[in-house]
Amino acid sequence: MCPLQLQLARVGGLQLSKEPHFDDHQMITVCCCCGTFLTKKLQAFPGDMDHSADASGLLEGSDIGSQKERVVTEEEWLQKWEMGNIGFHKEQRHPLLQKYLDVLLNGRSGLRIFFPLCGKAVEMKWLADMGHTVVGVEVSEQAVKEFFSDHSLPYCEEPVPEISGAKMFQSTSGNISLYCCSIYDLSSSIVGKFDGVWDRGALVAVNPCDRQRYASLMISLVEKNSSYLLVTVSYDPNKHKGPPFYVPESEIKSLFGNCCEIRCLEKVDDFSERHRQWGLDYFLELLLVDAVCLALCNSSSSASSPGSVAAVVQTLFSGTLALHQAGQREEGSCCKLVLSIPVNSCQVKSWQRVGKARQQLSRGNYHPARNAGGK
Ligand code: SAH
Image (cartoon, rainbow, N blue to C red; front, side, top):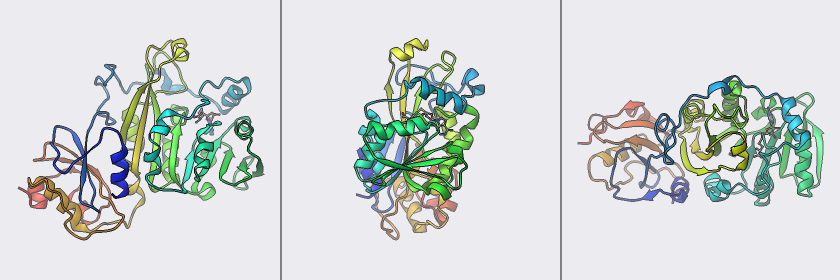
């Protein structure tokens, strides 16, 4: 199994099949290195859900009401830490990270994993203990120091020459580095690039006016083929001012969607007494992933065998459904196409590993018969 298959096969609800039954709006993931494909019903595809009833019967919209204007200053965050007003901190590992750890790791070991706006997230220690290198950024020095003391981890601290006033706290073992500064002071030249991101309580804590800046920075900090796990929340933004802020799925798509293919892995009811006190009557957590993020953005020379994408698509639509690898096999490469059925004029939503095939499968309506010789 190639990494893409392995990863997707582990995602709940995916069906690995050689003879799928195509329904409306299935996601078909084609792997060009081994010629099999995966299908998944598009249940919670960002953008598709807005203004439509979701599985829980609640309406999700793109209106964020008065939250749009809200700004929480760094001083306010520091105060929250000082006052112990940190209801966002969880003593236990996040259940969705535990459940979807395989998606983050994607069969890889020794990753560099980034925790934006990390607080004192306990998952940092957990991942470091697995052999990964963890880097976090947090504006509160108190939070950073509490992280190390809570886990009885010895550390050293040093200034960050490139950022005035910033410090980097590093575990003596060297595998956890927490930058104490604003995330907007970071760049890949300072912290390097990452293979994975655990974004929980981060995008949703960013001031709405800073989201684009945040997303652009995150995109610049990840390696091609990294995994980005993003936890967002859904509630009625007219009833709570945030943070956490409600980030509509359509906005997530516009922030990251040009570079990523975003999927919702799971949506869970996280309603608690705390949320009831905020005046809410529902509160959901969504785990979104981009498994093969940024290939389009970051890769300039990753063209796979030009014929192979078209050949796979042609095979799909020529009616045989017996997918095979036509064209040159390229070890370790994957092609991912997201197609909307019906097949006669399917829409190619995104793909990666593009070469000549990109011209043939240009974004927009793709006609297999015309472009790839299918019937
Ligand atoms: N991700 C953590 C904490 C989420 S709360 C968790 O899962 O527990 C958001 C955190 O971001 C707070 O600890 C706050 O102090 C920090 N923060 C807010 N603005 C920041 C900024 N611009 N740069 C770095 N950290 C920031």
